[in-house]
Length: 270
Image (cartoon, rainbow, N blue to C red; front, side, top):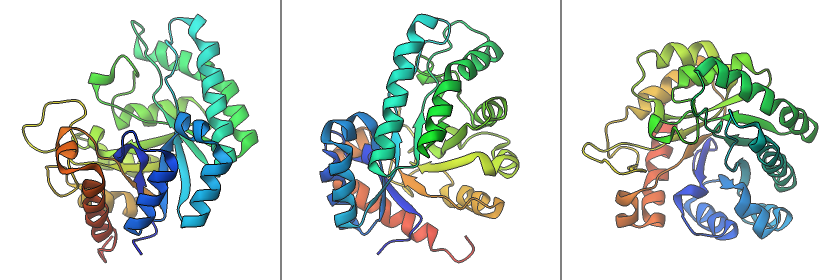
């Protein structure tokens, strides 16, 4: 059995059904996963939850659908409905977190986009709270600017300060180069609901372009140390995809990545 803090994301297995993801995660010896909300809804959240319980894998978080265009209020109602549906699916599947991108700020200044996002999210936060589910925003690099205006951990923490009840999902693949990442983690660790891990190999230029942990440049073990020293007690979720992973094979790469993360999580100093 792998370390109890290790999770393996369903995004490691593109095109695979939620129940097949659960089977593969269980076979690796991991006991947690994160899954796409639409996939769980399509398979039936009660069915997915029951299968997870049968194989010993908990569904810890769901990945929400696309957000609104924040300077086009006509897009808000549909985006709210999708997010509320994801919350309902999460509650039925036994997950306590839905994480998302903010939706595009398009031409808005950052502060304006943040204010609009808070207005957009407020009723969804109320619904999530009633369902026992947290909502978290994930920062993503600027190549995802059509889907989010939050591109750094610093900005995600600032947004969480502005939007009471909002949590942060830190994906190291997107934020590992930030100059003040350690300080941000130390100051805002209570806002972090999930940590995700993928490596970056020198020369990769596609999108996505992740590598198995330990195969690239990201100082994963060091950053995990910062998180644990700051008091982070949540899960560490493996998320790897892209051409390098396709070539190796999704299951094989995920198995190797899970083993690498398991070793890091068992390091005594961490």
